[in-house]
Image 1 (tube, rainbow, N blue to C red):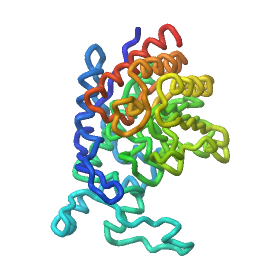
Image 2: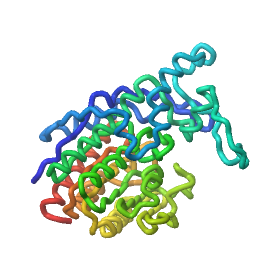
Image 3: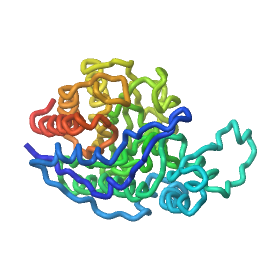
Length: 356
């Protein structure tokens, strides 16, 4: 059985969100640095550990606008140089005004000069804070995904990127949902650049990957499919992830969303995995957005998937036999996190050998 190499970087620990702001209330962050070691301790034994290649900011321009990249690169230092910690005790960049259509009302805006005004141009929620180390961790997370894609392009059947912070909510122009840089989209684009004509991204995270969908919305060469808790039931990202969203322009029909009811467990969840696997079977390479927050113990979703369910999902997607980059997304229950990721990896490895 081919053993999947694990690509990681110690710099992914450098992002410390401190807290989130939800409905105006600071709440403890769940996307914490300890996630890296919880996963690494579980998946590392018996697998090759590969430290991610270093990448410059320019590598992110493959899927992100330069303005977003430059903001993320400089925001924490600019905030620290400002009056925010002295005035209100806030050491993290937090948007508080957003240039939505309601504010703009059809008028051309003047770019804000204050950093606390500018932040809402790029950050689209108040739960995704930028602080010391955020940029370094996000760039390292991207490096994990890009290095894993390089390994697959060089002939490895599968590679796993222990990317943290996660990425699938990051859009071409903005960050949110605890995501800053879209690691899975970077991996998919890298596989395209390496010569794979049609790449599939299958997103098994409990939440819809609105950022990945946005990046490939008008493209036919990257197919995006997601199964996730129904946003119409009040779950993030609320306004995207509905079944009627199927792409536009050249990408019409290249997006597929399978929203699931609260309380969905293994049987219905795996039916959705099967459906997406059949939908992407004719692609040339696969990226899996491997969120394990659909598990029953996870604090961030109401789904009820078991470790056995994740193992079976791995067999289904691994059974496609496609060159595969597995990119870590969500998963926030530290005691079970590593075991859930291991269950999926072992399933994917077995699927490649014996099929579904």
